Structure formats: structure tokens, C-alpha cells
Length: 147
Image 1 (cartoon, helix red, strand yellow):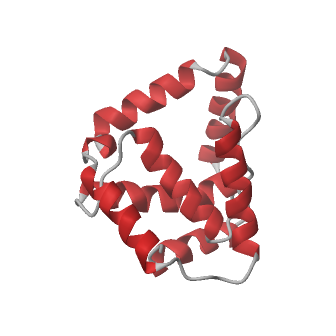
Image 2 (cartoon, one colour):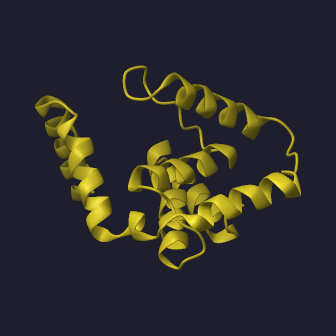
């Protein structure tokens, strides 16, 4: 369950007309903080980010499932389920499942949220994109920075 301040910050981003990925960034940041403070672990930076995005979708951020080439079929289906879950009335996760997930994540290490791990992930993610795509993003970032 995301913290109230995180949900509020995401709502504020939505009111300001920011992109869904920006709204979801609050949840990812929260997840990385949880890992750093030892609440639980993650196997990789990619998993830490995925957990944050999952929480964002369940909290109602209209974040579309990943594109066909960028993620596995299972990941896309799970993302679609999470989006529909946000629209349906909230059902409490069973205590048994919640405990099981917590136990599994507690066994994982906390180095997934380290600066080097996140930097490595960002570099590898950028390397998979085309030069034109990276350039477009940089130009868009420069425009929003001016504002």
C-alpha cells in the first residue's frame, strides 16, 4: 500500500497536467526508498522500478502497459490486469499472499537501489533506444526545463 503523501504528490502532478510516467515516478521513488531503508529488497533495479510502476497502476495512474517489443507477454498482461484492478472496487489482498510476498522480498538484497545499480540500469535502457529517440527525449527535457 503506497503512503498517503506519495499518492497526494502523484495527484498533484496529475492536476498540474504532467505525464502519467511523471506521476508514476513518485511511486518508483517510494519503492527505491523502501529498499534503501531495508524494508525489503529487490533482485535488480529493473524489478524495483517494476514494483513502483505496479503500485502506480493500482493506485489509478493511467500508465499504459509496455509496448509489444519492450516487455514480455506476461508483463504486458499483468500491467493490463493492474490497470483494470484500479478501476474495480478494492479487494483486500489475503493475509497469506501478503505475508508470502513480504517474505520473498525480504530475502532479496538492497543493492538493487544503489546509485550504481540505478545508473547501470539507466545506461543499459538508454543503449537499447535509437539515437533519434534519445535525442527527442533530450530536446523535450530541455524545453520543459526552460519553463
